Length: 133
Length: 219
Image (tube, rainbow over all chains, first blue to last red; front, side, top):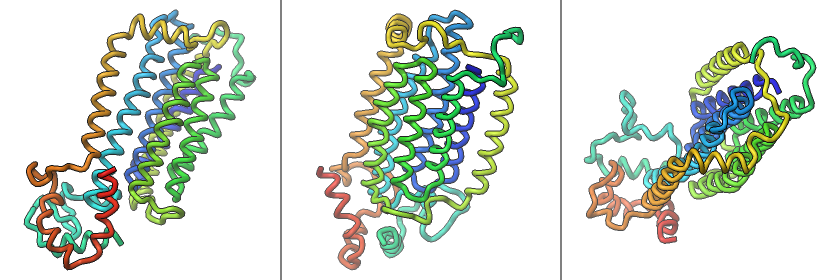
């Protein structure tokens, strides 16, 4: 098999995941796109491991071992990521990453009430009301 | 590895290459639908098609153990976790018009530029390289297991510790903090918790959001 086939497919999948990470608004959809990028890396690792095991007489199988490690780390990452997203959703009532602007600079919208903890209660109540609506 | 490998023809693909190309087209198409669809649950289901297609690609590359691990972990658990996450964050069923943020054209530009650069570089670098798929499988369970437990034992054990840490961390993060008043507040929203009790009496709306979250916490 020509090595360009898996390499090109992997590059295309990675860029698809890149588009998803940059363009999606829901945090869980962003996590799905991260999974796509990790899978593209896995395909690359497997293809090059199969190639090197014949061409270079490689008996270490480092590509496949790294693929297994990547899969395990991706599973851990998705667990932690979903826990964080659920905690944010519980505190804010939304999982839209466009609206989590507390640490952003230069976006002093009234909905993002920054690190100042002495925000008037009416502001937070209005934000919660529109978040739950 | 060199240009002198004559028996491979670039314009006469083998059966494995044709199968790889077809499954690759399905995989790439499903990935595109995953990142562009406006229905959130459908995105997770198209992700299943993408990951299953990648498992078939691993089988075509004779890496059978990786293929089954992919099916078990990704299709079996990661997608289920994502669906649970969509359910718990009350994702809208059906078409949600704000699934894409406002900078999608910039994202499209970046992604297309990165794809063009990567494909160009990869094709130019591996134009005359062929994978030899004949003979014993390079990724059979025996070969993978032998290399994993002969050469990669220490990273494997470290990985089990990492998985344990991730498990404990996920539990700690998703558990509703019982001593919210004693611990220092993590963000500004928690800092206004004392004022929330005042506003809940005046506003009936935040109750509808607070109650399901408490039910999740006690579960």
